[in-house]
Amino acid sequence: MQLCWVVPALEAAIEHWVKFSGAGPFFVFESLHFEDGIYRGVPADIAPCRAAIGQFGDMQIELVEQTGDGTGLWGEMVPKGRLGFHHAGLYCTDYAAERAAYLDAGNAMVFEGLMMGAKTCYIDTVQTLGFMIELITANPVAAHVFQQFHEASIGWDGRDPIRTLG
Image (cartoon, rainbow, N blue to C red; front, side, top):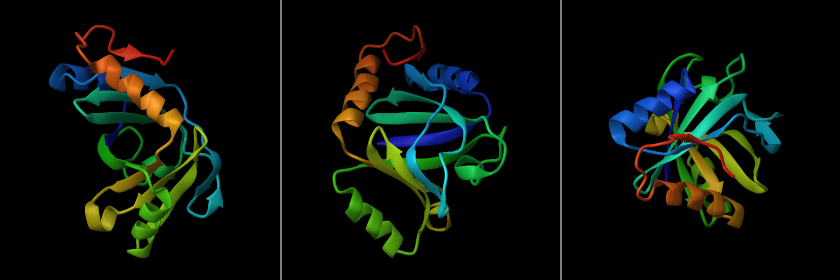
C-alpha cells in the first residue's frame, strides 16, 4: 500500500513527484517519533527525519529526508543527501503472523516500535528483495489518517501540493 524513497530535500522531491506523476497532495510531518522503539536490538527512537506522504492512485508515496547524522534506519539503505528506494509498506490485519513469516524466513528486524499506538516495524529484506519491508498494524487511527490522504487526492487539481493534517 506504500512505496518509500529517501530523498535529499523533501520539498524538491514533492515538487518532482507532483510535476512528473501527478501524485499528491503531500502531507508533511516535520518529525517522526515512535514509542518503545528498538533499533537493531537497542532501545532507540526512529532515526531523525522529515517525511511526506501523498497518494498516487491507490498507492501511498512516502518521501523521507534524513535530518540526523549517523547511519540509522534510513542511512542503512541510502546515505544522507542521496536519493534511493527504501521500503514497501504493508498494512497488516495480522501483524504478528506477517512479522513471524518474515523473521522465520531468515530476515532481520531493523526497527520496531509503536506509531500512533500500533506496532510498526522495518524488516531487512535487502538481500532477497533489494529493499526493506515495513509492516503496519491495521488500526482505526492509521485508517483515519490514511483515509485523509486518499480523500485529498480525489479530484485534486495540483494546487497546494504541500499540506499538514488538520
